[in-house]
Length: 350
Image (cartoon, rainbow, N blue to C red; front, side, top):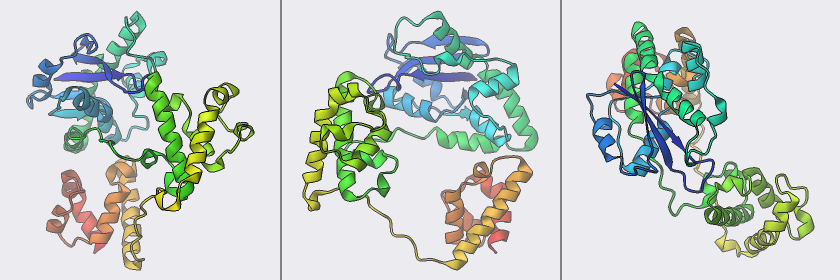
């Protein structure tokens, strides 16, 4: 059994990268510097060995990053954050968990540190080591608690599915597609937003900074909605300081003007999925499933969303499975959900 953690530099550079890999065997911790040793393929043998359990906490980002940067895959993953969720812990962040279980307090100063900086100071090294040194012991405690409740296999299945996640390829996708609130904008405002996001991305790329450190998302939203025409219109926009107006004002106004002058037939538009026709029976089934979920989750002492998310309940209400074979045909259902709660779900739907 080996514990892993990563540190990256997403808050400090345009293209994020893994800057440190922490590996713990029991309480012995090893720090691997991928900036000095870019070939991590020897680790691939260990990570892909199904006979060795790999313990992570909140592994989603780590799994995506290891594959993106080094093409490393992880088999026999166990995510201690999932374990905490299935035990009904109120706080599942690693710092809170370590404090509760071991009385250890991580130094929060380094949570947003620039891990690409070299050399790493002693405090950063100590923080990185502490992050991982308790994970194997934590696994022992959590797996024991889960086993006593009969929930260990639940976490193992969720962890197995998590090991398959990969970073999403955004190539060719419009920038507004991943901008919160864009789906509520009209086509003209969307065109302005897309132009501004491309402008910001270009500045971020050249300066090797994250786009949000050039101009915040809130600033971009306000600019897209207000569509400033002259320099005076830029004053009073949240996040747009006089210094930023001096630096980027002219280019912002030009970008907005070009988007406002674009012909109607070239304006972007959010693809809106047509809503299914209202089905009172389906809606009633969904309400009953939600009531069952709330009561069952409460009896288990876990969050309702951990037991079953809304997307699954909506599928169940739509598909109306009649038996276990029907449940097997629903890809979104986990094995543990079918085995432990399948009969109850079918009874609710019946």
